Length: 298
Image (cartoon, rainbow, N blue to C red; front, side, top):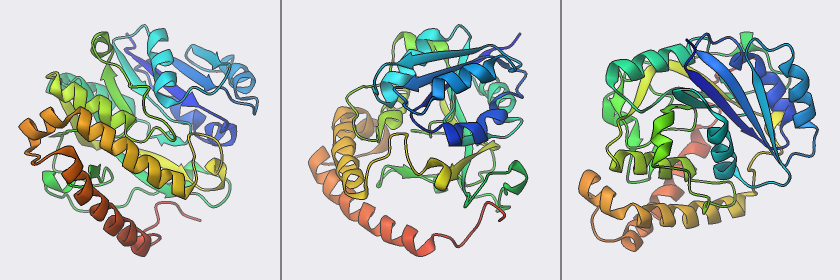
């Protein structure tokens, strides 16, 4: 029996959603797909409703009359889910053919309530083709190479020797539906909803849920003209503002857990000073390293 509801929030990104849509249809463990149209004005809902007739699984389209943001869209999707598990997709993420089945199998083996695989960025300069996706062959790294809690960041493209417990993961995660009986996404997060996923995963860990990252499944975040607009996009200055604002709220909210489980010292304000310095250094290093490794053939 199919055990997963896929939830895809979207806002004005029909071009990107059109590109990745086929990757959500070939999973035997998926019972239904819920697309939450968060106030789009590009005809998203009508187009997806047209796709639904040819889809191999039931497709439910739910519309928000106006844009309410990512946390609210996730909650709308959860309310429509009737399966044991939910998997959050995104309108610019391509799933590998075994992404859902691998996560489901490993979640059951590990007794995990939350699990996500690797996510690799693919820069697509023009029209997208699945055949051009490349998963870089890299050696396995130590478990602690994934997470950098000093920057509240992670590299989810790395390969570890096997599944590892995770303080937080990225958004393309398989989550036990029962977890939402006691936890939810915080609609306080504004702008591009920076940190709303991390907030949920920290809360899940604090509640005793098992959260894992696995190297054994991969999905691809497509970047390029197809998603240059829409979504939760904000300009660079506002991005930096929300990075600071939302991270401070996150760390303050979860300070007790972070101190007890991960050894955070001092207080949230002193930690934020260190975070700001780390973020600026990381931004410079990423700018220097951008484009050095391609995950998409042109």
